[in-house]
Image 1 (spheres, rainbow, N blue to C red):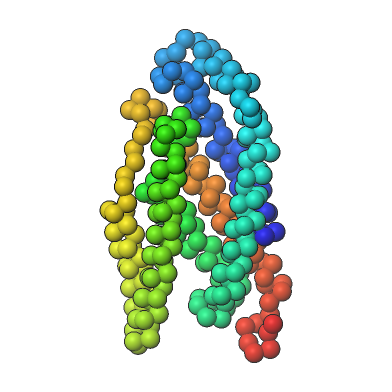
Image 2 (cartoon, helix red, strand yellow):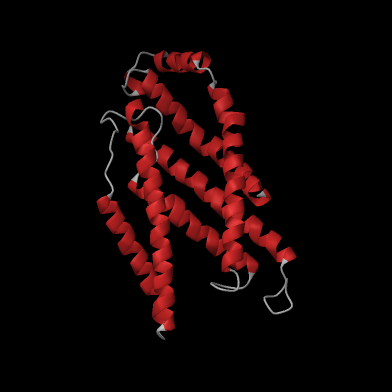
Length: 244
């Protein structure tokens, strides 16, 4: 959990520097009347944006500061606990025995399965996009895609084990990866599609926001993998019968 909180601090710094500017532009776009900022009268978008900041119950300053860090810290702590459990289950059974190597590989796999795959099907969108009536639906299908991605990874893992037990160890990993990709593609086809992006919304702002959102997740997962790996190295000895 401490590794998760430490990683949340890194992710917070990334989100503040990379993620907040496109989010501010998206809010300014929404307040400018759904028109590109540059076609508004000088100062209109900025004035509307400042009006939004001062009128909200939770100001943008709080949202982008202590609010953002608190959310990431709570999520990071929970993710760190789950990561430690997965690491304990895998060490000595699957993957390399070196704590750092296993931790980084596990973090990479977790990022792909939990963050990247759902984001490919349902990319992050700023507050200026989408209607309040569909928030619940969009949340449910995103979580559903995340669950299907996790199930696909588990099935692909057992497929890898089966191929290895049949004596085809060199083919086990490629077969497992192929199984995961095929299952994910099938899930993509079965899950409903959602596209509420207005045609007038600036593509550059949307792309920057989505990359920043995915980058924040990548920093969080990578930070946990490295921090937990080094911490585990100092606690765990060589993987043998005398190790704890």
